[in-house]
Image (cartoon, rainbow, N blue to C red; front, side):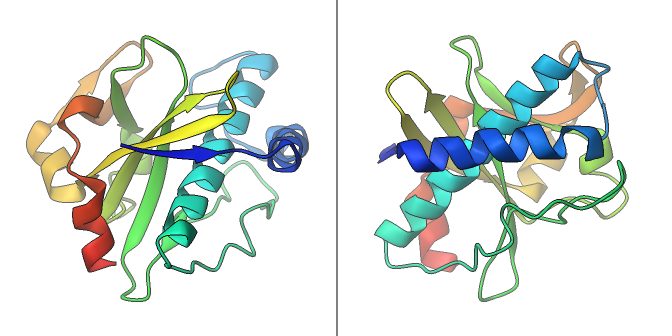
Length: 172
């Protein structure tokens, strides 16, 4: 597990993004606006943390579009990160104490929407830290199958069973 510090400016940018993008996002789980905004905000912090982690390892990622807003509920970015070898990576942020797994909603995974890899990060918002836990491949998620954890079916893996992030670093 690797620890990344979040700066106040990065946190402010993620708050602003969540506020601005809220009405352009699909309400997948029929949540109230404050819950949706929280999920968008924490997810964006996870993305920032992982990009900073990669940068600390000498891996440069084009993050110029990370705060882009795509008008319309069905328009969204196709991935969080694309590697120089054209592998797609999506970041999943666990932000509650009880979050023990990453879950990819089936509508974000099926019909050729799955990414090559999914990275699990854990957020400690009060300490302003992201912990990079590990990663899982699309193939492993398919092997696990989909399950309903209370908000609809999704593909999943336990955080504690994610692969060592160093193995992903070697191939991206």
